[in-house]
Image (cartoon, helix red, strand yellow):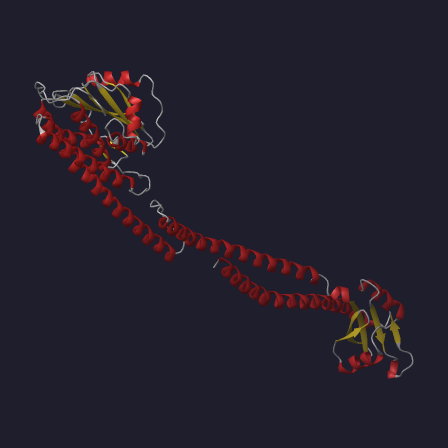
Length: 479
């Protein structure tokens, strides 16, 4: 398309240049010729008054010498009485006798071709009634004076017009071709699974409409895949949490074959659910980064999930606390991802700490990051590095590592990270660093102390009275 536009522009401009430059060049040549002969007529007219007064040779020679700019003028005076003898010729004659005689008979000026140029033959009436002829020589160089320069200028202007039109056509072609290429590249990227591929809306109106349609189609594809992901997240919410409650209840059934079979069945069911959720999460598409305005209100999600887990906490006599969730906190994380991460960490608290163990969730909003702290008063984790390794999929010591893996992926998608340490409650503290601007999370030394001071200064949102732990509660603590 680009070269086709260039060729069309080249052809059209060349035709226009030829159509105007050739006639204009001919006009310039005729104007130069007219200018040369007009000068010759003026020189001939300067001699006419002297011829009407006198025919004296010496006087006429002085007049011719003063009127002519060079030796290109001649005067031919016929003999008195019309005879052939006694005729006077002043200057160099270039025209033939026949041409001079014809001008005398016609009585009007005439031009004739001679060697090296042309001559102007101008008849002048004498006082005697006879006709004298003034001959003015016009060399070829004077006839073509300035014509070559004018033609060169016209040729340069025509070439500049052709080059300019080709350049403009090329730029217009680029404006048309580039949007089409971007549309093709976007289609290829979308076909390769890069769901963040979008096409800028630019170029001609047809290509702009095509780009809008392509972007709308890509958004629909992303939305459909996001719905699939939403279903997987909903599965984790619907199955993991009831399974945690079922496992805790199965632990209090006591001993016996039926109780052991129940616990074994619950563990088998939990492993199968973990496998399903892990498969659904690993197969989720890599969509584009969240744009401005995307994400969720972390405070709202924290309040919602704590309202869900508070019922189970009351049943087990756990004291719980929420801080920092009393005002909106926007984060670049999908609502379902944050909810799944909180459910994973809170599920670990209920699963691996004894009944009656207190826990807390703190939300801190900074300038460049949001920190979510989930802490408990359990026995703590002896090897945090090993726990994080399980979170990357090792699945050792009877733990699938699925919960921490969910949390880690959610934090790293924003450029943040996850840390495990000791909490002020005496147990484990999991810190989720959610970066707001997408940069890699820096290593914040001394941050934990600052977090503790801010957390202690906050008033709890809600608490419940702890109850004595049951004998079926576990003493170990593992995340």
